[in-house]
Image 1 (cartoon, rainbow over the protein chains, first blue to last red):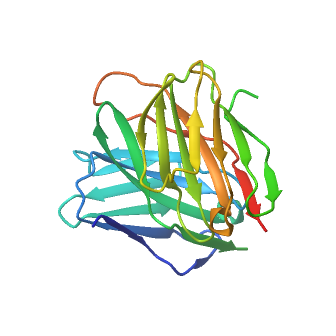
Image 2 (image 1 turned 90 degrees about the vertical axis):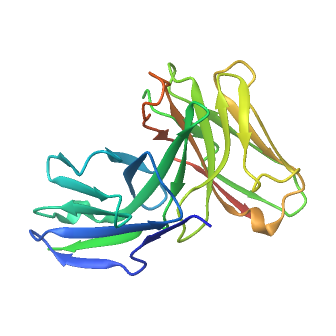
Image 3 (image 1 turned 120 degrees about the vertical axis):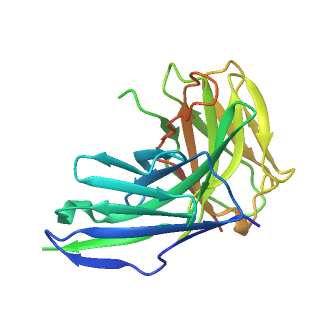
Length: 114
Length: 117
């Protein structure tokens, strides 16, 4: 069956360091992969999308890589700030029937300490 | 505010009661999704609408669950005869379809947290 794995333990880092979050998947060939941020009691907020034919995508302090051979995506936040503390969700999708059904991982909680 | 809105934000009900949630998507978005999220898990897909047509329902959506989008704008999700296992956050998301085979970005609402006592 399809499976998406993200670091289940919280990631604690010091302000200013780079946070790296991992998303691994099995039995799936996604057309693209998305990363979302979710704060407690709120809905997920879209951050970045990367397609299967792209290796890397950047947006300000965020960087995502996508390795379809390893079936892995890495999400980096450089120069991290306490405001980056949240849960980060990885979501895979295949474009089927003209729409996109997202399959989410359980998320990794990031805590950035001053 | 032009984002996705959901109402109510919180609902506490007794087992066996019926509940209905509403989602108002971003106005120009023709695609609407419902997800369910339990503590410590990511959102799980429930159902999808393209305009007013419900095109897919997850196996998670038992016969007690029904969703509608009557005029292709707002949507409602009803749960009949609620059970304690229905306690979760119910999330609505919307997007707009563009060119075929182009990924769309789903914009989520704040969710409705349901507690079944």
